[in-house]
Structures are given as C-alpha cells and as structure tokens.
Amino acid sequence: MKRSILIHPDPRLKKVCDPVADLSDDLRILADDMLETMYDAPGIGLAAPQIGKSMRLIVMDCVREDEGTPNPIIMFNPEILSESEERNVYDEGCLSIPDQYAEVERPKLVKVGWIDRDGNPQEAEFDDLWATCVQHEIDHLNGVLFIDHLKPLKRQMITRKMVKLKKERARA
Ligand code: NI
Image 1 (cartoon, protein in one colour):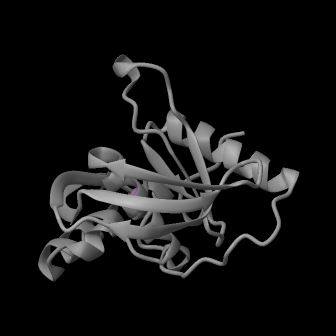
Image 2 (image 1 turned 180 degrees about the vertical axis):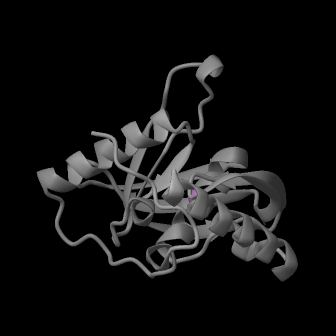
C-alpha cells in the first residue's frame, strides 16, 4: 500500500526517531509499503519519518531502472560504523522537498550496520551514490534534512518555496 509523503517544513521531519525494538509483521508490511511508495515517487531512498512514523527504518535502491536488476534494501536501526576521509559531492534531492536539488559533500565510503527484514544483523560497505543515499536516509532518522547541510540563505530559500508549495496544495 502506498503511503503519503510528508513535505518539509513539518515538525515530524525534525524529530530524532526511536529505535525499533521488536520486528513484527506490521513493521515488515510498513517497510514493504515504504519501498512501494519510494519506487512509485520515484526515488532512491525513503525514511520512516517521511511517512510520519518516528522509527529508525529506512529503505533504498540506488540501481537505476535502465541499469539492471532492482536491489531493494530494508534497514532497521541502521548505524554508520565507519566512514572514509575521502569525500564526494552529489546533487541531492529529497521526496519531502520536491524538485529542489543542491550539492552536498559527504564521506565517499561508509560502513553501515543494520537489522534486515528477517531480523538478522547485517554489515556492508557502501560507496558513491549508495553511500550518499544511506547517509541522507540515516540523517532523516536524526531529524536532519539535506538542506541542513547547506548555507542558511540557500536553506531558507528552499524552505520558503516549500511553504508556498504546501499552501498551493492545500488550496487545490
Ligand atoms: Ni530525503
């Protein structure tokens, strides 16, 4: 089932999310719904707070449609275990900040630990776009948006556009 995605500014996007204590079927369904919502958007990552759930859960798939088999990843309680000194710049966007993009610099490579859909602990290294994506999504779990990495003026400009967009959508 598709869920609706919150648009910035929204206080629910600024909260530090709670860890997931017990993996239930409800949570698996929620994760599957998040993947469906992400693919439909379309996007390459989605975090639970973006659909109004304050829990540490993210989904992602950075394989482009024309590039090969989909590789959906569900992460409960993801944690960055280490990161490279080498950094990378990507033009980032966010499903909660539609049609706005800006360059953000982050570590090029990160090692991440998480609990998978079956409740098993996993660990893997991610680089380039995958690394940026997983860091962007984990940021969401801490109430941080990609625009929080930008200079205040740029951030305020984007936020004003989003306030306007939300007003227009509310009127429609
Ligand atoms: Ni995002």
